[in-house]
Image (cartoon, rainbow, N blue to C red; front, side):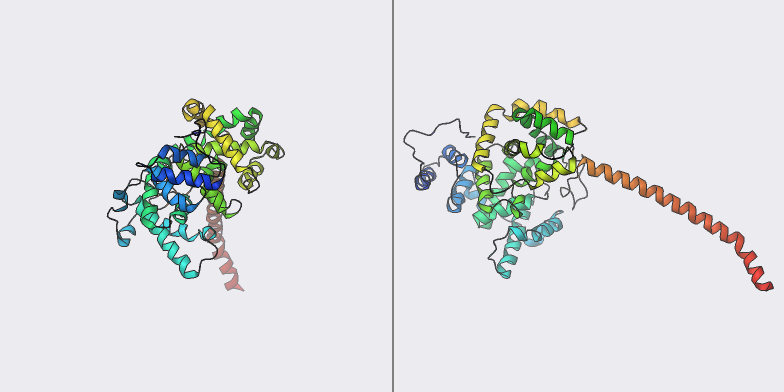
Amino acid sequence: MYLKSEALDDEDDISSEKAKEDLIESCLEATPPNVERLRQMCVLPRGILTNRLRKKVWPAILGVTEEDLSQAQPTDEELRTHRDYNIVELDVQRLLKRYPPDLSEEERLNLETSLKRIIMRTIFGTNYHYYQGFHDIAITIHLVLVDEDLSVAVLKRLCQSHFHVFMMPTLVETSEMLQFIYPLIDRCDPDLHDFLLRSNIGTMFALPWLITWYGHNIQENVPYNLVVRLCDLFIATDQHMPIYLGAAIVASLTDQIFAQPEDQAEVHGFLNRCLNTSMAWETLINEALDLYLQYPPASIASEAATYRDRPDVDRPGKQRGGATTSRTTKVNKATQDNFKWWMTAGLVVSVAVVVLAVGVAKFYRVSLPADENKTSNS
């Protein structure tokens, strides 16, 4: 994996976009393509620059072959038999804000159909479990690549290299990866780290950043061209890189975070709203790469694991839901505790109502005959 510690060759000139485009083209035309240099181009400022180039660079980096593109595909009828088909269909219908704004109704419906088929083809015949958020990844990839077969091939490769952790039968592995953010924040600012723990916000604020590659946030604050630029970075680097970027983002907001009350809802809400176009994204990417070079995942893995049993770091439950709803809900510890409280309270109220009803029934069985006698005597 290329990181910025590797220098460009002296003859390489990327001072202008045109020069960088020419260098990318030359890497693609090499036999075989110069994949390491293409990774380098992904990491450097502005990434791969255009979707025209991304259509060639992403498959080359991921090792997509002609064989991948020519595999026999399941029919639409077969896809509908998959356990996750219904939830995929619902999620795709919710992606309206991610579609290009100039689409006609017919084009939008065609894109929905295509996207649904791409997701199902990616997971069909595998052990992968669809998770809510994978549709954000899929539409980002497909809007760049356009071709269904190519989109499926790229997504399948990404499932093997980057997303397999999120597609397990349980959420345990995803939770463990999220825990890496706290050691990284501690390296950036120990006081900020302690403030976040005291605020009891856990790790769920970073979940959509990690599992959608920040694509989920495009709906409000992050423009499409930034999301695809982040894809350049993440495709070319380690699967942990979204967490490193998340740590850099949180550290850059230290003053604003300290201005929040030391309260779970307030701090969590702020971090959910914090991403915006005015942030210095290339600087944040650079800081994330610095963090990776200084503290690679292997060097902090044991420390990250210590957050697993901390009461102030929330963790998803160990087991998924049913076949069609597994991977679709990630509930934090506070929500689970509230749910348990309300369930207990509801049970107490229900028992009280039953006791009251039994008492009323007994009263009427005793008093009603006397009332009837009074009525007949009158």
